[in-house]
Image 1 (spheres, rainbow, N blue to C red):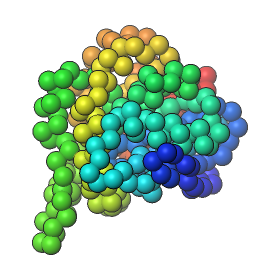
Image 2: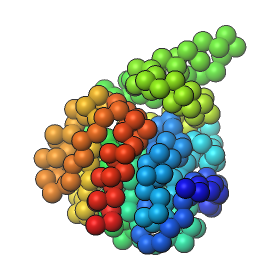
Image 3: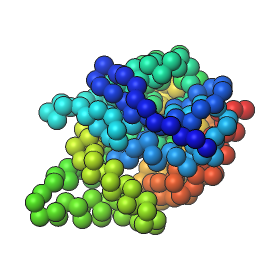
Length: 262
C-alpha cells in the first residue's frame, strides 16, 4: 500500500490528509479527539485497492491549521471546514466513516449537506441527552495546560491509559504525541461536541448506516439507544476499547468493506 500525504484548502486554513489511491466511491475517515488521521492507517491498509481513501486531520489536530486560540468553533464550523477540504479534493459524493468526535463532525456534515454522503459509518455514536452531554463535559475537555514542571505530561499519559491506549506501548506513544500537539484543539473540539444536538440529527438520518463500539468504549452504553433510534442500521461488534481502528482494524475494515462496497 502506498499512502501519500497532502493538503486541501478550506476557508479556515489548510487541512492535512492521508490518501490511498483507488477507483470508485471515495471514503472519508474522520478521527476522534485528540488523535489524527494516523489512527485510520491500519484500516486503510486493509481496504487498500477497493477505492480511494482519505483520512483528514480535523482543524487543531495533526497537520491541519489551528483555529485561533480565543475562538470557540462550533460543530458546524468543523463540518464546514472539512466539507470545503473535501470539495477541494474534487469529491462530490462519498462514503464517510467517523470515530467519536469524527462521528459528530460526520453527522453534522450529513445534516447540512444530505447530497454529499451516500453511506455513513459511526464508530462510537454519541446520541446523548442534554443532561448526559453536561455530565460528559465534566470529564472530557478539561485542558492539560503545558507547565514548566512537566506535570501535564503525566496528566496526558494517565488520560490515555484510562481510555485503553496503554495496551500497546507504541500506540500510547503515538497518541501522546497527538495529544500534546492538540492540547488546545482538544478543548475546542470537545466544547463543540457537548454543544451539538447529535441526538436530533441522528434521528433524522435516512441514508444507509453502520454503527459499532467496543464493550469497553466509553460510548458503548449508548449503543442500545443508537440501535433503537435507527433499527435499520447495520451493527458491527468490535473490540479495542476507545481505539477500535487500531486494536480491531481487520474486523472494522471487513465490516466497512461489506457495507460500503456491496
